[in-house]
Image (cartoon, rainbow, N blue to C red):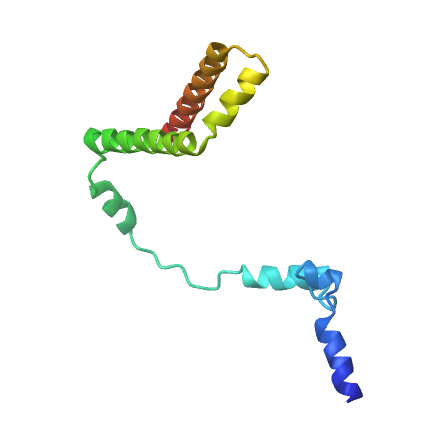
Length: 129
């Protein structure tokens, strides 16, 4: 029974080394040696006489139509994401709080429209790069 309790304590104890994913008996030098062994490429190089380059050169270039379609899909994704955010946004609560704080409703709506346009423009520009 004592052996079981010792084993159970050892198994259920979470140490710092276990949390960091490292074995305490596995030192830094041993880890580095093991990692360098795992990263060695022992496979022989197979020369393909430029086969890959020839195949890539024979592939058709992307058409302007495909690029325009990708751009339209990106615009649609940005508009859809903006619509989902607007759908989930609590406009009623924001408007009632704005009235209570006596903030000009027009300036608040204008600020919201400008910020969402800036966010959409940034998203489109980031997607195109």
